[in-house]
Length: 165
Ligand code: HEC
Image (cartoon, rainbow, N blue to C red; front, side):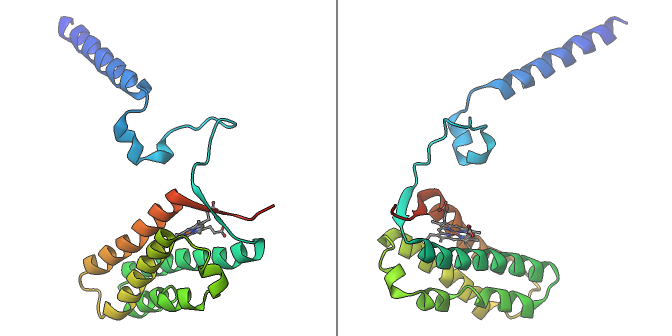
């Protein structure tokens, strides 16, 4: 009986401690997970740097963005199915030619670090397309996909598009 009570007290203590931890204000460790916080509507500030583009230029670039997301999906699906052809096909949709086909009047407006991150992303997709010969070991492809998506994450955290009024 006494032992049961002791256990109950211990359980209570532990759950209180965990609860208290959940209630702790954001620590520096949580900086790595920006989505975990609960932003207050009306008090949120978007501090990303603006890349000024016209509305139709944004439409063109956004379409490329959605294509890159589709490539990420196609590559992961191909990896899961061990389907080399699908992986290569999906990756080549978002390679360097995508950037070259973008009108130069748009490319000229990109800040230098933006261009660098864009090129690194397309290069990783090209590498996946060129280097995936079989998927006995998916790790090298996943590593390249991780490089590509690191650039998605970094660029999205830094920039946004907006058109002058
Ligand atoms: C060089 C910078 C950069 C890179 C690299 C980048 N993006 Fe973007 N992306 C942007 C910006 C800027 C926006 C617009 C965000 C805004 O205005 O709020 C955007 C928007 C998007 C959108 C929304 C498009 C729409 O129709 O509204 C998707 C989806 C997207 N990106 C996917 C990706 C994926 C997937 C990758 C990586 C494989 C990627 N992006 C890499 C800069 C980048």
